[in-house]
Amino acid sequence: MTTAARRICVTGAAGKAGLAAVLELREHGYYVVATDVAVSSDDVASGVLRADLTDYGQATEVLRGMDAVVHLANIPAPGRATPAATFNANMTMNFNVFHAAAALRLDRVVWASSETTLGLPFGGDREQDPGTPGELRYAPVDEDHFPFPATTYALSKVASEGIAEQIARWSDIPFVGLRISNIMEPHDYQRFPGYWPDPHARQWNLWGYVDVRDVAQACRLGLEADVAGSQNVIIAAADTVMNRPSRDLLAEVFPDVKLSREIAGYETLLAIDRATALLGYRPRHSWRDEIQESLSRTVPASRGPPSFSWTVSTRGTPRARAQPSSAGR
Image (cartoon, rainbow, N blue to C red; front, side, top):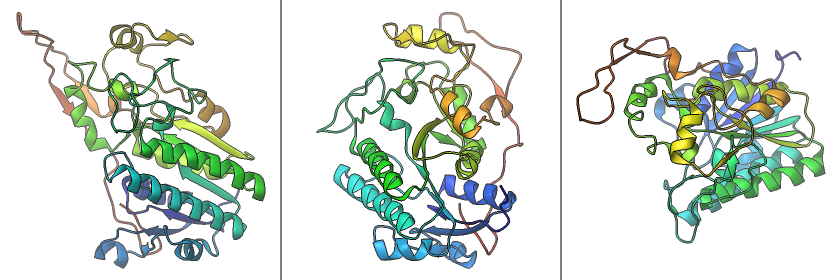
């Protein structure tokens, strides 16, 4: 597929994933129009178009003349706004973008769904009332561990997947929903050794994460893959945030959860097999490439788990402002 003439609108382009997606697409020959509702003066100077996608007219205008959209604009997690505000805003934005894309005859919609549709948070109490605790039925969790929303944020993503399925059916436009794990930038990996002594600290998503650069790769692959209808896939790293084998973590924290297949070493418990088969997605980045655990480990007598020292490489992609024809953060 040639990309030289492909015009892509990236919504949420002033967000963490948005900047990475804009840069990835531009590096692969796409012409990118970037938009967000929260823009700084620097963003505006760089060419970011401010648009409120809860307004259908503005959603239509930013997509006019585009070939496809990478839709990343949403309230990105539970707890950022009230439950009702989160659900209403996300549903309105998603419907407006999906419907406008169909009305304008775009070729493709790639959009950010969420790992939370799969039953998160695992092993904890309910996060909202009304709401429910998460549910873990088996591991690795795959696309069939759906739907089990435990918050209005997750519910907004589940409902949006239903809307995407119907608008894809109406329009024959492929929709690719990315059930994205907890996004990390390279500098975030400095925190990972702090998780290692307590396996319960990150049990809520089975110790999952994804590098922001792999999210950007997934956005591009979603545009390029030969797919039809509405497809939804998990986007995660190939490993976990932990320095212990994944099977051992499950045995300690979730001893009653059955394994649906064998797990090797530090393999992710958020299965990415379907994303690999459907999109050709293969994670390129891991915290293990950024953090060098020292060869020495000190185990103080009778004082709990071992302590670690580590160094953080500087090989991560730096944050950068976009050029005048695109933008992001």
